[in-house]
Image (cartoon, rainbow, N blue to C red; front, side, top):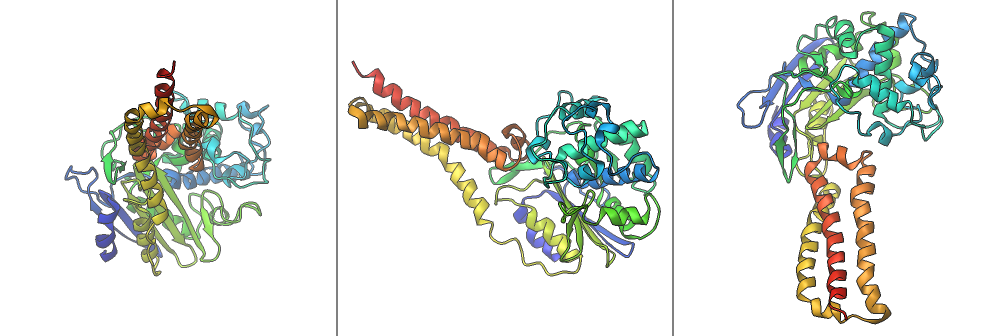
Length: 442
């Protein structure tokens, strides 16, 4: 509690909920507001979008189908989904999809989705599109985190069970576990959810209240409260046969293969500490769920704000709460000077070019007087350099984050706008210099 009181203001998060589970006993609490300035308090039962923590629910559902004898972990997806029958990835097995060793890339998993993400067939249409892609790596040879893997598994669940993904997860996992303040993104509007807040030039801006989408449900669309997720963790660690067998739970929390030593089925693994965990990053919401199965301890942290680039970061808040809740020491995230420096460097680019535009106009006579090879070089080289810079800002940097720039805007709108502004003003400055120079020549 003292840690939260100290760290929460620096994160800029309007609200958070957390829960701690130990040997089946749960303590849950919350702070702040569900929507900044609304006065609506966050409670331990406030539903948050879990983001990629949802992958463990999808993995559990697949294990239910395995236990029922309806699918096999080491059979190619082409046997189960007709759209993959002749697809480049037809031989990718369910085990490889569950463990992110299918060969599909992170960037492929973050590609723009099909239109109308809330329609009943949205997931099927997106997976049909994925079926046309060629994985950059051979199955089982390379580990790469990719949302596409879990969208395929969601489509598998729908086809084998005959239910849509949301209905299946609700009936076979949420209800049996008593997760009464939890549901799955189904294309509908759900009042009462914690509203997301995105970084906005050092602060946080509330996102528009919008209906949930179906496409990302298997990879990031389970919505649950901190107390409910703690119940879920308790079941994962109880060593009993219930929603799935104890053996299946253990398999989910073990390395899936030699190629996947730090990931099981829907869970990240830390072999050194024995921790099993997963984070979730959705536009405006960040989450962290962590377990120590051998000790029967677990922690859930849900924050209704996305962290900025060094400023207003929520990583320290989430990791600190989870670490302390598991009874360990936490030294803090450090100064984050790397991300802060990058953010500030990007922030000053557009203003510098705007100043350059003013100076170019004031020095127009000197530009028009340039002649000879060196003069032409000094006029044309800035255009080449700023075009390269624009490519770096609009293409390369977003790809380093593993996503196209349109998707990056949903998570980091302020930085994305600064990248675009820097690219545009840089090219504009170079073009203006050329226009001024050649418009004044005879």
